Image (cartoon, rainbow, N blue to C red; front, side, top):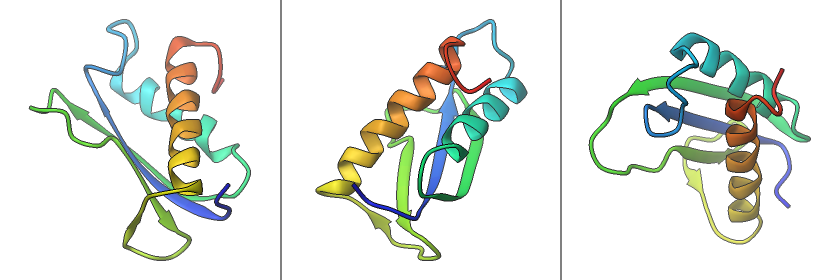
Length: 94
């Protein structure tokens, strides 16, 4: 799995339960993802109700600006998505 990663995570109304505020959801997710091994710079933004279904997790090599995908990066993205959803369900990220 990729190590030493930066991540950008966009939270939308489709991901976040209605009973969790935008501020609380950003804090929960950032805290949970920052605890993952290799996490470096983690950006979590509230995007509200955006149209379409844009990618909501983007990964980068530490300190670089080109999004990464494939192989171990896709595995890491799945781990981060699971971590995010767990934090938003209240079973993690506290």
